[in-house]
Image (cartoon, rainbow, N blue to C red; front, side):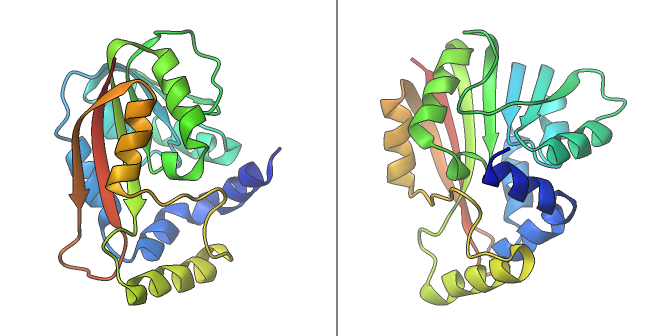
Length: 214
C-alpha cells in the first residue's frame, strides 16, 4: 500500500466535512451543480469517487456507472451509499493504470482527482479506455485568482483537518495548464469554466472542463 493510499484510508471518515472546510466555501456543491447539467453520459467511469459525493448525479445521467477509488475505505463508503442504485458498481482502481479494456466507456469523470495524480499518465489512460469521441469531464480546485490571504487560510485549515500543508501529490492547475495537458493527451477541449463562490470569498476556486477524445 502506498503512502497516498494510507493517507486517504485514514481520512475517509472525515473527508466530506474536512475538504469543504479546507476549501473555505461551497465549491464542491457548485461543481456538483455544473455536473448536473450533463445529459446522456451512457457508460460512465468515475475516478476518485471518494465518499460518493458526485456518484448519484452521474448515476441519474448515465446508463451505467463504475465508481472507483484507490482507497479501500473510500470504496467502502461509496459502496454503502450506492446501495439500492442498480446501475452503479463500485470497485478499487488506480486511474493511472486501470484494469479496463480499451474503448470500454463513453464518459470518464475525474472529480477533484486529477490534481492529486500524475497528470500526463492519467490523461493517457483516460484516452485509452474511452471510445472514439468519448467524453472526459474534469473538475479541479485552483488557486488561480486567489490572494495570499486566501492561500494562507487554505494551508492553515489543511493543517488543522488533515495534519499537512496539502494532500499527497497535489498539483494546482491553472486553466491554461489544464487545457494544455488535456490537449496534448489526445483530447479536444470543448469548454472550460472557472467557478467561484461569490458568497464565501478567500477559498479555492474550481475549474470544470469538458473534452472529447480525438
